Image (cartoon, rainbow, N blue to C red; front, side):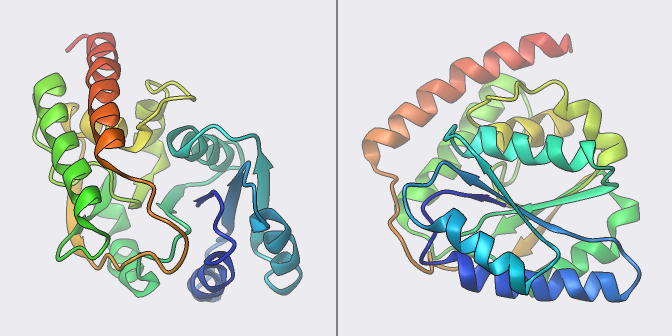
Length: 232
């Protein structure tokens, strides 16, 4: 999980997902919960350090602010460098449901990449618009249709997804969207599963019309550059 200014949410999120980690450990899986504090200006990292005393499988990481996409890449590289076979990524704002992870995990051997598809979203009109804009940009630049490219609820097989991650710059703005698009274009075994997506449990939604336009413009040029590098 990436985390930025999530002091209002982080305790509940760690409690909820640590229970899922413990369930996996109980079945013999060597599972961990790594959360990277992306240069928060609040008490997010201090809270994570305190929670570590209660949750020994929590790994609090601290890094300078670089944005969501770069922080996700930082975490993916961290997991791969520490021998992960599978990586699950979600966000730290409390919008996803840990219980919906189980059906992803049960099918992990069949798929390279499993992503949640947000149905009946409750996170605001502006974020729905962002998703639709990105879907159009992905189709325009990569020539593929991706149901929900930027969902922060995804389980990845490192063996097959690792080479895809190598194609994405570590500081890339929309790394999860690029990952989804490349995986579809390369014909990997992907599936989208319906998930619940709740309202933010605390904090402020920073998306507005101005940011939507900026995101769409930047994504267009960034994706064109990556698509050319694929040589497909």
